[in-house]
Length: 522
Ligand SMILES: Cc1ncc(COP(=O)(O)O)c(C=O)c1O
Ligand SMILES: N[C@@H](CCOP(=O)(O)O)C(=O)O
Image (cartoon, rainbow, N blue to C red; front, top):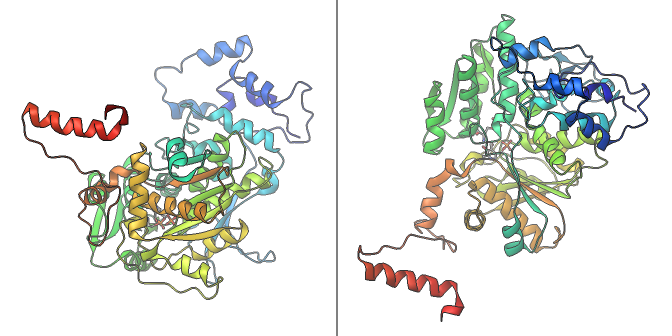
């Protein structure tokens, strides 16, 4: 049992790093989740007065946070991913290491015993108390879970745009009209600082780089290979901290909106005549030779930030667990990040189960799907073909082992979407008021398929993760609505009507339109 009352003395204190009372301490008799919330929002009179006092005008929010830091015993380190329990191999997070001694992936392992000294109610209440504030750094959806992300980093080193806390949208009309579902939700991770979920991981990675540079570690710049979103996030966070960023982009394979982001943010942009997998191979070779820190999700730090989207979903449902979460997959870090976030919440007692995960791939770039269909037999990379879901045009995903692990542990499923299916799904979603990216169209296609086969039931609470903002992919929507895509019917296209500039012509087309919409006018 945790003693939570001291944390809620004032609204400011409720957001502070913990010097927590261990769970063996007696709990006040009046303790209950509701009374805790009441305490947090309606502090006693002196505390309420303190909460209203504005920080001195010569102080910024970092200075203010510095005055309030306190110590705790939480820590994290790198270990080989899915290592044998007898393994003793580990690295501090201040080491520059991306692979285990055997060449395998790494994972950030938290001191779960230290975190378990506090019960689920304690963590739920702490995280809830931080939402919607501007307290540094907890105003970020990522850093509001700092103890579970990078517990040891100093608030001064954090580079944040107050990312996260994205909308969990009730897709009422889409669910009802197209799927017969009433509990369908879209987690809009793309409505974010640089327009994709990558911000969640990049704030963590760039903050750690900031710390390493202050420690005089050999990091001259930060680099990534990208299909457009990682590079946008990397360049924005680096620009914010004044750190050089270098991005390797596959020439002519990313959208104009994505390309202009690192250019505008001052990154060193290399447009390379290869695909993403080729760029990934090159950046791995280059970061092994030069003092450039690797920012792709091969670097397990990124996933610590991305996992907070899963925690946020639970939080937004008031800690009730959805039945399904559907995530589009490319390099396959994110599906594992979701699993890890859900699993930590279960292990630390915030919830009692995890949702079933679905990973959705474009049929033109589907190595995970093929692996799943083969019964997880030998994995084979593929040559990824062109897809409108260009950010997941990846044939040799670096996190394949992480994804397989996450799917096996969550009784997960892998689905795929053809180009026509993903574009139709995107158009249908947009027709109900969303404006999603093609990757989210891939995830929605998976949902259509699993609903049609009855695997997902009409009353199942289902979350589709939307990974990027639709505004980054307007050309695909223009092509679709102009019906300019070869061999695609574009069934839900809504092209503009050309009309002469005279009253009669405008009236004619409007009457025809209104009649088609309302049978009472016939
Ligand atoms: C918009 C978008 N959606 C989905 C993904 C897939 O994420 P992951 O590579 O973690 O599987 C990516 C990047 O790969 C992306 O940029
Ligand atoms: N979609 C990604 C591909 C690289 O993924 P990462 O998570 O390993 O950085 C991108 O936008 O570049």
